[in-house]
Image: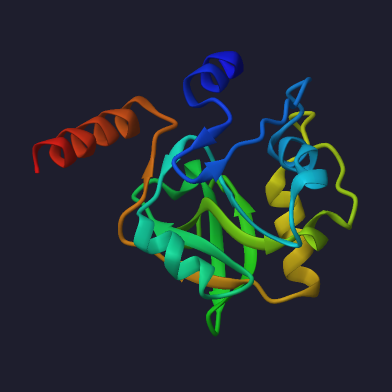
Length: 173
């Protein structure tokens, strides 16, 4: 649906100039993010496209470099579970069978381009996962944990329904 998105937004949205980067072969989130590397300034904000974030959380994230937004869920085995210590991320366990907590990765990051410096290998799914870059980062640098109370993952029918309800409430208010 890339061409549909480009047609809808064009080359500018409000005061923002837009640039589109085509991934080509779908080789994972890490691959997609790295395709944008030539267009990134040193620091950048990365957010997954199948999640809804609050503007206040984005602003909070941008005040603390480098950082990652976390949320609490009832079904942590479907997400990347995060362990923290003294306000920083210490471990990221992708979709664990027996989660050690319910604090998870929301897919919103404030990083710099050095996140791409270590090479990562393809995952068992045959993809380059952005979370592998994050795991490499936390081995060598701090990554601040910012927690939200309101984030909507829309990667499931339940999440989509919740997002639709929120949008309906926003339109009515």
